[in-house]
Each structure stands twice: as C-alpha cells, then as structure tokens.
Length: 363
Image 1 (cartoon, rainbow, N blue to C red):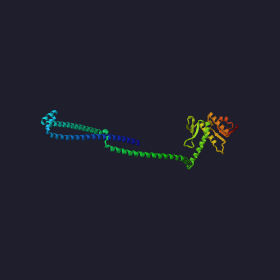
Image 2 (cartoon, helix red, strand yellow):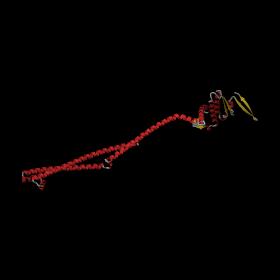
Image 3 (cartoon, rainbow, N blue to C red):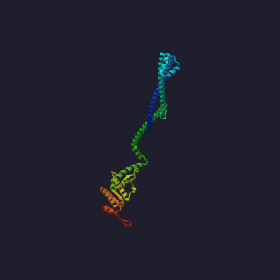
C-alpha cells in the first residue's frame, strides 16, 4: 500500500507540476496579450485625442482663413493644381499660403487616420488572440489547468500525504512487532531445548505407578540387546536386522534388506526365520550378563526342524564358535542331522509300556 500511495503521490505531484507550469505559461501569455491590448488601446486613445486636437486646429485654421466648411470641402475635392488656381484670383499670395496650409493639414489628417486604422487592426488582432487563448484554456482536455482546481488538487495531495505517513507509521510499527515476535520465538525455542530433557524425565519419572519409567529403562536395555543381537543375526540371517518400533518402547520390527530396507512385522517371519531371530536375541542376552554373573550354559529347545540344511549349518557353526569360547550349549531336538553334528549327546529311546532307555554318547 505504501508503494501504491507513493506512486500515486508521484503521479499527482507530476500532474500538479505540469498544471502549474501550463498555468504559469497561460498566465504569462494572457498577461502579455493583455499588456499588448492595453498598449494598443492606449495608442488608439492617444491617436484619437491627437486627431481631435488636429481637427480642432484645422477648424481654427479654416476659420482664420475665412473659409466655410462647404467651400473647404469643395476645395479638398478638387485637384491640387486647381487649389492654387482658385485661390490666386481671390486673395493672391495669401491664397497660396492658405493652399499650402490646407495641403499640410490634409497630409496630417491622412497620417492620423492611417495610424488610427492600424491601431484598430492591432486591437482587433490582440482581441482575437486573447479570445482564442481563453477558448483553448477552457477546453476539456486542459481542464486541469483551471486555477479553480488547484486548491482541490492541493487538498487531495495533502490528504494523500497524511495517509501515506500513517501507512508508513503502521508499517514501521508492524516491522517492530514482527522483530519482537521473532526474538521472542527464538528465546522460546532456546528455552524449550533447555527444558526438553527435564520434560522427558518428568513425563517418564512422574508416572504414579512407575510403568513409564520401567518401560523407558527397559527400552534402553533393549537397545543394547538389539545392538548385540544384530551382530549375531549378521551371521545367522544377514537378510534381516532388528529395531524397535517408533513410539513403542518394547515392540520389535525387522528390516528386510533383500527388499530394499522394507520394514516388516516380526509376525510376518516364517518359522525358521523366527527361530534364527530368537536365537540371535538369546545369544545377545547371554552376552549381556552382569559382570559378577557369567552365563556358562545355553539350552536350546526345539526349532531346528524348521531350518533348511544350509541355514542349519550356519546356525550350528555359530553355536560351535560359542562353545569354543567356553560355554556349554545344550540342544533339545528331534532332527537326526544334529546327532551327526553333536558329538556328546543324550538319546532317549522309548521301549514301550511307559519305559524309556537313556543312552549317553561322549565326543
């Protein structure tokens, strides 16, 4: 809005300047023409006054010469040579002097009459120019140069300047408010980061039954367990990797690397895959025993029957390496292939009638 008002002010100022210039030019032209017109009128009046004076002197000279108006009119209508011939028989040398005086008066009268005619023509021309200029100034295309509109335009410019100043003040106040708001938001963000840890601890520890705190602590332990279990899962089933479900502290999901990192539920795993994942978790849990408590024995009950031969070999290889570290690994299974792989084993043979025979084979 300030930009629009500024543009309007600039256009209005330019229009006012143009109007002022044209008005001053028009006033100068009118003043010049008026001065010329007044000068022409003054010269005409002077010419008329002088013509009257000449006429008065002419009448006085005619009367002094003893000529009446009709006789003088007849003499003026005659040829100049006739003027001299007519005057000589009547008065001699005095008649010749009167003829010369009359000729001079006639010449002066002609000069004055021509001056008056020229003044009248000049006055008429100036009057015509003034009328044309007035008509041109009052045409619709130049109505803005009318002097009566200048006060209205000046008042409109003043109102526009006042509104522009008001809008500029509002813009400055808005900018200051925005700056204070940004500073307050930045300070709030810093404070929120500072209290985030306290807020989380308050949400966790503040539970009346302690369930949230237990879940939080167990989730930390579960993260450590998953880190160890995934290292074993790299050997058992490199295709999968375990992780916690977001926003669920104690729930697990698997990442299928063969499917481009697709996230799957643990319930979507097959029996053999579930066994391998469980075995990796069990191995990781045994690795996380306390410093003063060492887990030396690991018992595995069933599950090997769900594995294909290749996967079974991989699982047994991991168990062999675990046994090589000094731990005892016990396997309970009905898979015949385990008998060949496990040197020391205990076989239970049913004899019927509720009787069984136990056979111990040492490696």
